[in-house]
Image (cartoon, rainbow, N blue to C red):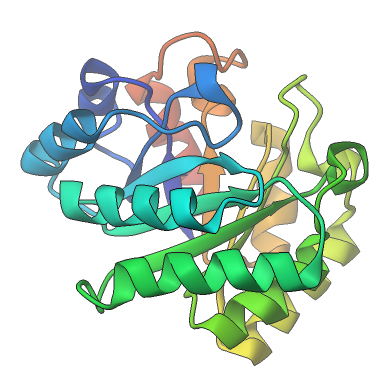
Amino acid sequence: MQLLVSPSSIDEARHAAAADIIDVKKPSEGSLGANFPWVIREIKEFAQKPVSAAIGDFDYKPGGASLAAYGAACAGADYVKIGLAFEGHDRARDLIAAVVRAVKEEFPKKYVVIAAYSDYARMHSISPFDMAPIAAECGADVAMIDTGIKDRQSTFAFMDEDALRAFTDANRKLGLGTALAGAFKFEDIDALKRIKPDIIGVRGMVCGGDRNATVREDLIKTALAMIR
């Protein structure tokens, strides 16, 4: 299980060097808010590990999503991550296929991560269980669950351990990796180890509980020790 940490700036990214994956996002622009391409590029230049980049919580805009995905890949992201903030299987298929093509045609070894939300009912967006088979069909690499509305409610408030384990197991059968995120706390790590996703994504946990605070290297090391 790898630890993905989401700094919001170049300075914060330097404090996140112990993480397995450095995730570039802009929390002020949403759950999967996109940061600037030059921020991705600079972090990639000094990071000695994989870099992930969120490109946004997208409405049904396949053209905009595919262009954003291509831009993140060009800027150096090893993982390109998008959230589906809308409903509809056919619309999800259109957008996911466009994003996968935008990345994979030129960068076949880069990973496409498709995220749906644990709180999809209040987001009025597609269920993670409906999203994942479509992501696999379209050639994505990782299916992710995150919280869409950041009000300190955890993914565990909307999906219990059994549901998250079922999601992870189903993804494995589909040939997908699994990433789980969404206001996790240190006390959630034991449950996450039982679920066994490939990646867990954190920010608030390693900011002392407030995702608007600053990433702390000591808390990243604590999380890594607990995961290992």
